[in-house]
Amino acid sequence: MGYKVAIAGATGNVGAEMLDILAERGFPADEVIALASRRSQGKEISFGDKTLKVQAMENFDFSSVDICLMSAGGSIAKEWAPKIAAKGCVVIDNSSAWRYDADVPLIVPEVNADDIVDFKKKNIIANPNCSTAQLVVALKPIHEKAGIKRLVVSTYQSVSGGGKEAMDELFNQTRAVFVNDPIEPQKFTKRIAFNVIPHIDEFMEDGYTKEEWKVLAETKKMLDPTIKVTCTAVRVPVFVGHSESVNMELENPLSPEEAQDLLREAPGILVVDKREDGGYVTPYECAGEDATYVSRIREDATVENGLNMWVVSDNLRKGAALNTVQIAEVLVNRGLIKPKAEAAA
Ligand code: 2RA
Image 1 (cartoon, protein in one colour):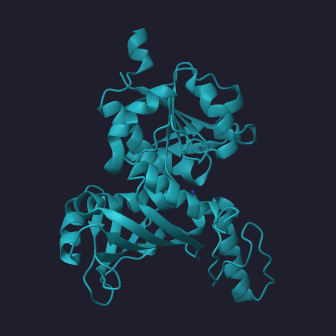
Image 2 (image 1 turned 45 degrees about the vertical axis):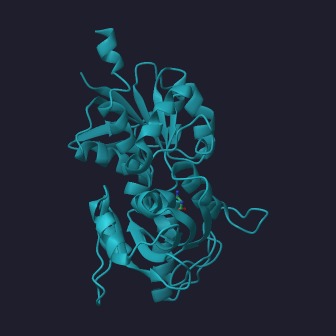
Image 3 (image 1 turned 120 degrees about the vertical axis):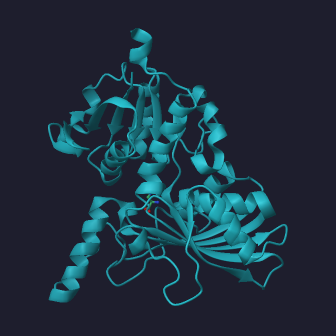
């Protein structure tokens, strides 16, 4: 007997990827329910070779649902996750609403799958921000072997991280440049076509943005609170795929060759690092892929035990939908939840 799974926010970028990934990976679901706001009620969306009719989340009874994969934004998650969890349905939420709650595990299965047991405290599990998910996958083997003391991260984030409207804005502005139409930024604060913007999410008092703070807070929660982290998060005119320049100061020496070998053995990582023209990855090549790609591994000789690398992944997949489904797989494969229908039979 399989699980009953609901997707809350099924009509968004990430919701659609969640449905695709559940189907691709053959998640053991007997029933998958697509939920969204009342506005989208009745809309049809595809799930594998089936078509699902979107239902309104407001009217939906979660009592018989085992797992809710949620990508509906922070304020909806804040209000709805506890209500859904109270019905005995485990919520795996993709927003930032629950990530920093001490009673909610923040999980990347390749990094800290064992922390998942804490889900019992609130019946909620948080999925990290896209830029942190791929980062910690690449950092974990290095931290285990050589101990990371300090990190300097610069992100190059695609517009899909800002949702469908942000993708449309890049498309429309790019077109406008060629046909000489006026460009008026809407979702972005400045023109994004043929430009880069050093600003993602809101500004905080210390001058950092919330996106940059998330990289700090989430890396510390999942990997090690003693690591010092600083970050600059930048939006770039790429549709899908976040890239990151990562500078590390390690406790112990680790040569680039040793780092390559470690990363090659680590789960979820593909190393493409040929030190020649084109011997590295770009986001365009990683869109639609599941792996976290690592290139340009090299020594930083300006500090003791310094190392640099370039990390790229599909932000809608490993950065969001894939990681959420992988968390659900950990719950199932470790026998942490049983289908409610099985208990009732
Ligand atoms: C972004 N990090 O790229 C966000 C999405 N979670 O805007």
